[in-house]
Length: 466
Image (cartoon, rainbow, N blue to C red; front, side):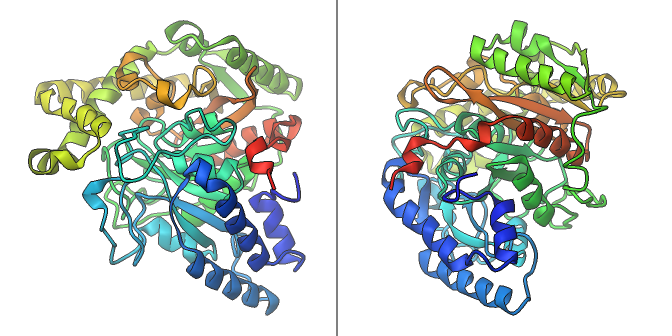
């Protein structure tokens, strides 16, 4: 890795050895924000004064050998749907333009307790659904690999900020792919944890039975470090799982030997064909896993359209339930994309919603059976490189099935990793899926792939400008 862009793991080691100052690291990130964010629009608000105070406190603690752990002194950002006490949390919407929470989300609190340095709140699609939009109080985030292109969403600002080195890691949310899609388009590692692994208390909801919170970072190992800080049972979240929290880096260096890998080829070759570069990246990854001793088998599931239909009906129904009051009383305070998309939920009947939930149960049983004697599954994350930001269709969510929503529907953990770069220099990606609460095996497989390739050594040219 470049000295200008340390990973969380690298910076953590240097801070522990007293070779890197949290103050200097934070200052470098703030300077990069000042230089680049006028183009990228990754931040809605930068908390420079409090960030520097936190960094100074972290440095003082480290010098006194009172380091809290591997995240102490690490600069991060939070998607602006995570409540932050005393700091505006807007959901990138006029509806909450003056909203200042009285308390932190559970994730915000846990990351602060781990010693992270919060640099500010990051752009999102409006309420994690309506974007990229140009009729909101703040502009949409742009892709550091080419600012004319889409970041993916809805954790758009986190994707842009991590890729450009404005932060070392950050938090996103994922209801149908909103961690994994920007991770794919911006070239990151991004994890949607198992449903219930990470508390969503204090996170603005979209669809209660599909929402997940999780980490986005430059490497798989960095995602593991962030997840370690935020995983665990929280009685404030009714869906929180009371399960032991393992050492997420415990087997991260074990390599791919012996991994039993299922390839859902029909998802990305037949149901929603990807472009040649994306397919080539996946095939190269499979070859790498075979060479390292992994066993590859093909897996067939119900068509991708079935998964997408059930997920979309549930997301729209639950999303409209969240926003119904404002849709009736303050509809003009929404942007066009969020308003028009959420409005579809008003036309879904209870019978349709229950039919989608019944189909969901069947699909979940099918996925569990397919994975019975497998460690991970592989398919695409996105079909191609990022589109131009002005060319993203309003109804993309219903025009084509996506590769990510099946695992929101099932609640299985899923990780996107970069598999190289396309002809235009934009990132490519694949998706790894594991059984519930088996995040360590995902980190093991993803880290094995990253270690055997050179993709993590390349940063966007924009971020390298001085």
